[in-house]
Image (cartoon, rainbow, N blue to C red; front, side):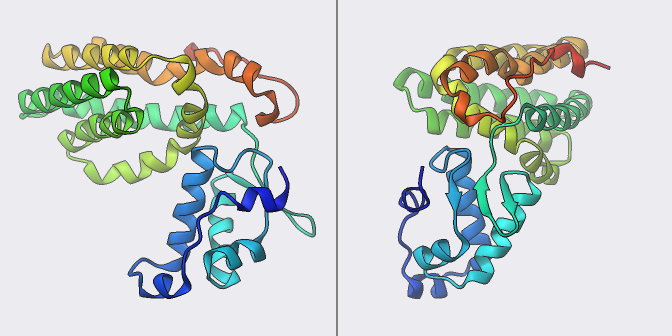
Length: 253
């Protein structure tokens, strides 16, 4: 995709509106670009220009430069001095690291939630989200389904007494989210996710720590089964060198 084509996916934002916004300009630019990258509106290896982005968004080059630096730190864009900036290709190493961080944090939260005095309330809340997910799956609303999916996991963090840690998990799982947008919509049926959530909740309700941990691991690691078909469908999105196969059991202690 050419530079101009890549920029066409970015909406026009009037400068006056940007000035009136209570949200910091850099954060607005960062959030916009992050969303476009995660949802493949900006595809791997698309070229992006600091100057052209600033013009498109009606902002100066400084917030664009700062937003791109944040995205580079997250390894979502690659900045090449004197050459320009491109959307980072999909790297299995990034997914592997993202999975390790998220799984480690969520398993710790799950153990604390299992010991919480309000475990029964947590079970009721999670079953409520499962009911929402089942409805969204029936009508094919993937956006609201995955919104409920996110809330499902956040509820466990809240029950563990560490709701504020979700910001760290959100950063840790960015590469998982990116791969998910590419793969799951086309190769995974939403009822599979519902069934996995049900197994997690059943184990929590029974106070079965081993069962709950195993159900959560299966749920979070499902993404690795979809790497081969995703690579077959979009090899151009992946880092050069072919696809590295990941054994899900690598993440076990």
